[in-house]
Amino acid sequence: MATTFAKAADGVQAVEHAARIEHVSKSFAGPAGQQLVLDDITLDVAPGEFVTLLGASGCGKSTLLNLVAGLDAPTAGSITTDGRPALMFQEHALFPWLTAGKNIELALKLRGVAKNERRDRAEELLELVRLKGAYGKRVHELSGGMRQRVALARALAQESKLLLMDEPFAALDAITRDVLHDELTRIWSETRLSVLFVTHNVREAVRLAQRVVLLSSRPGRIAHEWTVDIPQPRRIEDAAVAELSVAITEELRGEIRRHGQH
Amino acid sequence: MASTETPAVKDGVKNGVKDGNDLAGLEAGLDALETVQSGRTPFRQTFTQKILPPLTAIALVLVVWQALISFGVVDDPTKLPSPADVWGEVEDAWLQGTLVGYIWTSVSRGLFGFLLALAIGTPLGLLVARVRFVRAALGPILSGLQSLPSVAWVPPAVIWLGLEPEMMYAVILLGAVPSIANGLVSGVDQVPPLFLRAGRTLGATGLRGTWHIVMPAALPGYVAGLKQGWAFSWRSLMAAEIIASSPQLGVGLGQLLENGRNTSSMSMVFLAILLILIVGIAIDLLIFSPLERWVLRSRGLLVKS
Image (cartoon, each protein chain N blue to C red):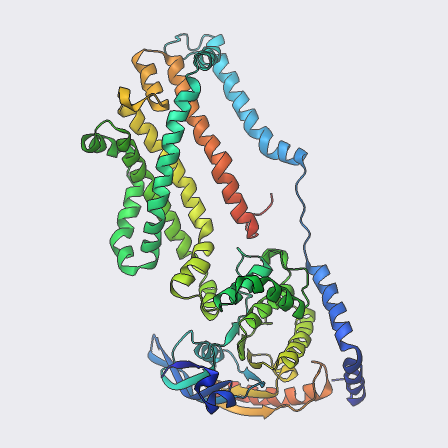
């Protein structure tokens, strides 16, 4: 009943799954007694796989991500990940007392990277997110999109096998979000990371993922799963993306409608 | 949906060929559009908005002061000396070489006492902020001490420590430590939980979390506490110097004021009050305000007026 950050050396299992979520339930103490938020979730993320968790509000998708990140413990079930996962939030969560470069270096430092290597590595990561020259910039001097890219670079600095993303682009304008989708796809395919991406945006889920997992609400259960085999790079306005989105949206609406019937 | 299969396929081909270049260019454009350029304010503007108003206020006070004497509203130099009398007192003290000595005696005491308060108040504040039991035990006492005028500590300090410099430092500590500790506590309380969560996912837990995340995040509140701590140090010291005077304590600004009262020299009293005021403002202006501005500006928290 805990989140385990297994090491790769622990055996075959750790290599086969970037994350293994087994029969996980989570309840919180609410005004009406114990409230079940997640009910018996079982989900594997393969190494290098991009999975989006989709659901309406109240489906516990952020809660699930927190459990996988080890920020909270499940009430029942177990979660195993291959090392400590990196986590990106909807807000950039960059530290305003550090420059963009130093934010990345802090992640490297906490991971135990030697001092003389940090600067070069931070510059490399900034280049990867196409922010060469932003090393000395303060967080407030960057635009929303740039902040999220620095946050992505900082998450990548952890060199985790698994990247958890909690609606990281939800607060951005449409054009910037579109560009960041392209960036994320490019970086994902270059680094072969596993990504577990939470969103309530169906198009975004289909645009990015190899697999879309739909959660029902109150309590969160896995309602449906789709494999997306549209070749990357995709665009959010592609007809194939639109077509699958329509089908998924229908399902999602059905799930939401069920709640009005009680 | 108006789009058909054909444009989608065409897009896909285009993406495959020159997607990298397109994306980099698009991104550079977005970054350039959304980045705000900020420059420094010109000196003229700083002068008219920041320097001129207080100078005007001071000039006005001097004019009213002089007018009270010139028009005979107050006609008793033992009650209200003229600005010229006070200036004469400044000149005398300067020529005798005692002026700098008065100031230095008090300032060195005040700053040393403040540094002591800093060394005690910081770990204390951190303990109160981070350890629940300590907070429940000491939190209310610290808040209470902050509202207790530190002049109340002068009589017991004299009895316990005698008329020694230690007694002054004790009074300063009792005045300034609660301010500094409370400033740090409120600074820590206001750290956004998001920073703590982000820190934990990066592996900053326990002491490393305190050092790398909590302390820097709490800095604005801490600096505000330091600023207030200095004001309290200075006030406490003046209270101690006015009440407790003895030859082995030397003559600071507080004793100067008390000496002026004993010799019925109102211009000396005025000189002492002026110096106390000026030193208090100067230290704040030279050390704490720049520190506070630097902390806030580097985080983009300072709104330009």
